[in-house]
Length: 343
Image 1 (tube, rainbow, N blue to C red):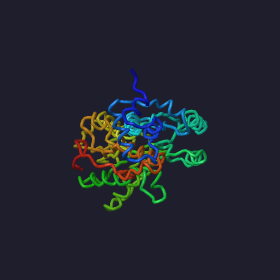
Image 2 (cartoon, rainbow, N blue to C red):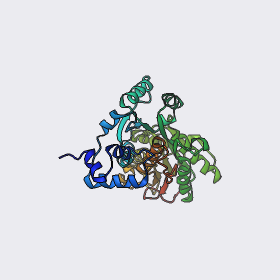
Image 3 (cartoon, helix red, strand yellow):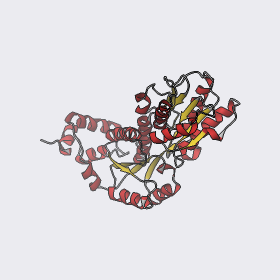
Image 4 (cartoon, one colour):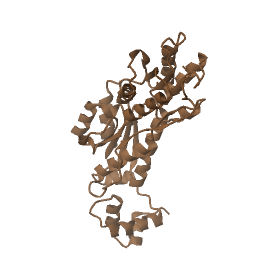
């Protein structure tokens, strides 16, 4: 037979109302009572009916993850990270893809929030970077946490998880410079994403600090896709590589994989004649030959901390999670696609 809240109350020796308060993690519950009830919950393997909890009171036990990103690996990692925290906190997760270019996107977004009765939202780029969306959520009184590319500011510590793409791009570029490369091409991703600007600025800062003149002709403006990486490599390296480029930094791993494919078609040996690096350490970076040097970005961990920060906001006093990381810097992973220049 299905275990009920009454069974938990009997085993714990408390009222059903107390069990409900514990399950809902109300801040007024004493720790001793909380532990006794949770022991009974675990012993009986009691599973609360989240739909019934949502209907029973004013509190919602559903949060949302909103994204507009063509990279399936990114979406899955972000989803798994948030979902793992939802299971710990007793919440359901609604996953909502949005089309950034859709003129009705904000209205559809608002309808979804009202229909799902969300307690809060985790927003990913580029949606997390749009002031109009943030203003709308503030007006609706919805809790949210934004995952952003950039460097932290004091004013946003309670609402943002930052990914320091600037520092990671600087490190990748410095790695290529340490191998003797001077003419380093850069494949930019979508201009709507702040990560594109941050990664480009990190690349440019590393060149400047190593006294390498900036050359806009070595920068290709594309999209975060394999096809764009192919097109970018052909544009920068075609006609016998007149710019004498010896290394390419891809805006992400998909672009780098496309550049690797295009280079092979042009008869360019990797890394003997050209070093190629990516960004994010997605499966693309490990499925190429040679495997890509890249920057490891732990999207599942990033989204876990975003969810933890969101639950700290929705839970109030009870959830004082002191171990939340709010700034992540992707770390350099050196593989076979980068090597010393022979030029």
